Image (cartoon, rainbow, N blue to C red):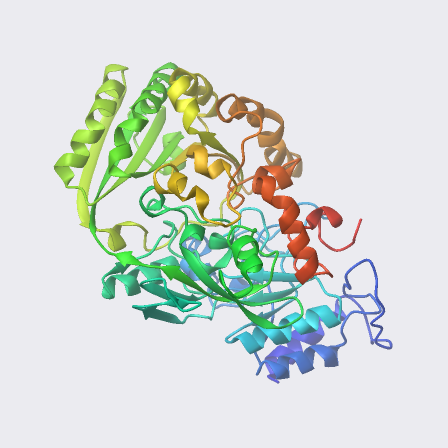
Length: 566
């Protein structure tokens, strides 16, 4: 045991209680927290640390970590996902405590907030097993984190033990992957800490591409795929979950299992492929289908307008032209906001629409011609349009070097059906004029996503008929009051959702990785008709609900913090 770990351990535990009394492991309807009779003693934590070869860390929030560094952390580091990925405690704020426990850049004080107390920095499935067994034996709140890109806060929990899989960095390509003796073609098996940027680079060296998102540091085999995993390549190849062949997972009983369509099929089909992040076990690795890499053209259009009326006309024009691009299987990211939010200085307009479109296996000239009718109509409406189109290898285009993080915000979303665009494109302009402070629309459905409807996984059926995954962002600055924060947290549910449902319909689903954690009926909204079976599988393999996250399967049985059964 390292002297540094022991000192941190004693400091943290002594802040909650003095000399420990006799260890009590009695069963309770609530998880054990510091100060409770059943909470592990210092010697217990030390034994866990020894069992994982010194890889148990006392977790501190980001500001606490930065204050321990000579010179602290720069503003750039504080918003760099690459930098923060190396900090186990880079998590959300705790606005609900009384008083709130916040940890802001340049803060002179920094509470623990929602940051776990300790983390097993796993380097093997054995390390994960040790952590899971310890949490189960001591009735602890358990959290799981691959990269921490979780808008719903599911990769952290107050007073918890964290299992971090960030160090599971294995990558193995196979030319003939077999399940039950049947060839599944070319694949890649990745540890659950491997980032998308790392995976794209490795895949390019093999002449391959995989279905993944644009965020550089999101882990391919983490919560991303457990939520379904949309991509700019989804219209071409389907969702990430559609292209996942196998998982290796540590379950709540500490066992390591392989889950595919032959071995443990119910856990593969429903639990891990869209069953929701953090609810089923700790993923050690996942095997994804690979495809031959190719060149693509990427077009970035910036459309500026000085009135909401003009931008509404542009949005309606986009809705009318959206089917123009179906033959190309494009993936498109559409952002409607104010220029300052995109850090565009000296903007020629009060509002901006940024449209980034990926055309697989398409030349620049053909891509530009396909988009021109939409851009012409935007210009005719009175908007200023600038367009840049380039061609490159898709592995180099689909993601960025780093991700901007550390922004205070919450999301709400819905899957908008194909029929809404066909039947009432003008309605999009009417509605989107009311979302100009942060509307985001992502074209990652249709095409192969719809064609994959018969794949036996737990994808919400709304994906198969959707044309668009539409998100709304509500953000605030560090100086916002707690009342303002809570107002932002409920604004989607109370104000924006009724408007959004005029596009999506009242019973549309949502992508659970980019959604509102306060959804009143998350069971239907996130999981649809799959929820009853998901709940039954959850009860079978995790009867103690060791893996509980907010708005996840089984969470209706627990309080908001996941600490006590209700």
